Image (cartoon, rainbow, N blue to C red; front, side, top):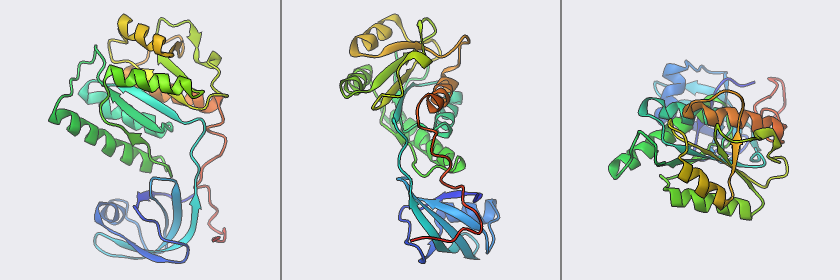
Length: 263
């Protein structure tokens, strides 16, 4: 198992030499203390994953030779989390834990009961922070496919997303403490895709729950305890990983140190 994953937009072919510089190279050399002879992984975030050997280091960059390149398919069914904006001190936690649990797309949503309010430049700044948090968490959790963080969505946008999911054979779930249907009974294994709607600290309003249900979302309960908005998605994703085939493939970085590279 290689120790670290770094982002490189264009991953070279097997046998090629390359340089990891900029913020990623600086982090590898000065923070992680990566040394010559160490093996690390490089990902373009789109499913291409390379195992490389470090052949030299400088102050804020390293040189490498590519041992192996593989393409990692996305998990099925893909999962989109519509995340109502948490309070500012917990927003990045929601993104980080959902990314670590394997989310494919995160859609920030300005729900009616959100304490945080994004508008104008604040919306752009918030989305940028979420994207940085998702990138860092994807590397930490050794993902080959980094999640997409969409632009801020309105309730109308969310309803369109839910309706499209259901119309194309997917399952849309609105997580709510008053729901009767448990996640295990939602028929997720046969779904073409899954959309999870997570409300804010005050929960989904009655009106939101009604229009989401009308669009095709099914009110669903995770368990006997009430979870924070910042952790609900990651708990649901963990359950979905077991209830579907999303977690059946194992880690793409489970590589023996003696394994021979392949083309």
